[in-house]
Length: 190
Image 1 (cartoon, rainbow, N blue to C red):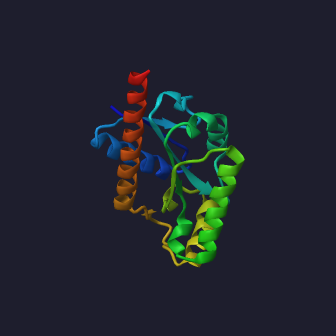
Image 2 (spheres, rainbow, N blue to C red; image 1 turned 135 degrees about the horizontal axis):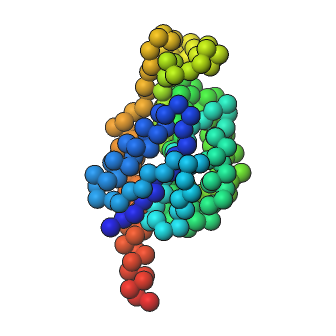
């Protein structure tokens, strides 16, 4: 059976929801999955057939705990199939300049940590206005207005394309399963 670690960092809870959906999709396809919030426990990626890391973009970078964790485990991550899911509202803009910025942010993160995931995916996050403090609510409303997004701060908005995320996760699950089978065959051959 394929063992997969889904590690995530979150600020407002939506990336946790994304990670949970990833874990459920993998379990539905027969994988054994551990869901781990980075910074809460210190689960190591060494014993897994694959690892998916999910993190939100905040202020042009990823959260410090995820940067630290990935940097500390880059060698173990690079030794197996891994995927990075980046949650950011910027992809909703469908603007070439914003797309370049998001690629730059991810590229800088990967270079800084030494991690080389097999696959990456940008997914749209959420605007949980009702969970923001007054200042963040105003800032996010201005950003959303500029991008043509929702600005009614009395409610929350979710933009994640769950079907696309499921398809991405299923493909990664197949990749991790092939790796697990190949590793098991190598152990038997030795």
